[in-house]
Length: 224
Image (cartoon, rainbow, N blue to C red; front, side, top):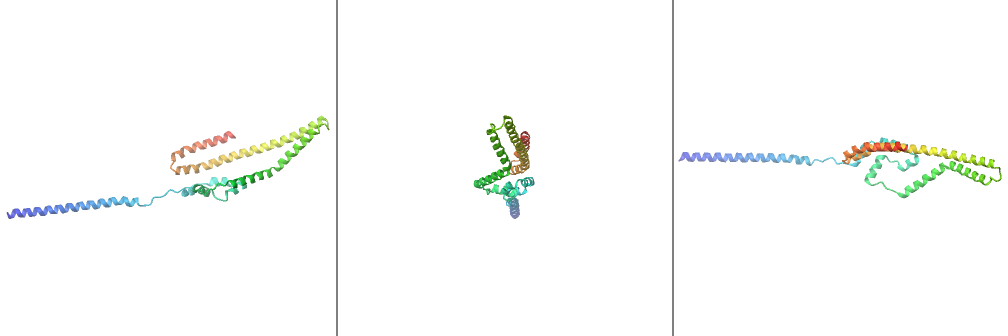
């Protein structure tokens, strides 16, 4: 009987030791599991970079547009208020670009008055020739018909020469304006497409670049 009791006591101790070892292993596994789950939480709490339009605009290469702006006339360049193009873009994005109708109207009238003064010589010539032609028509009876017709023809040819000269100047201005427009569009397309791609529309940016380039070039060639 004593041997049986001793065996039972030994078995009970071994069973208790086995249970304690199992609980220790479970506690160890639980601790490891909690440590592993805490690792991603630390990674999530790290700050992620925030997209900013200001940083995107500052990284844009606007050298071609700056050169184009430097080629503008002094009257138009004065309206730019001496601001760089990047500052204009940032003001437009922030909503600080104010549209003043009164200022635009005053600028338009000022430019119109300057153009009239610049072409006053041509307007004076046309006015004088028109008055002389009207006088010759009214004085046809005082001279012979051949003299009156020759004088009238001379005035008419002078008016045609002035008109043709002005038309040639207008054609040159129109052609130069079209060249400047195409150059401006070509210089502006890359920056616009970079902004489009920055908003996430990468496929649209890749498709629009060759399309817009082809359309602008074809439009300029057709008008020329």
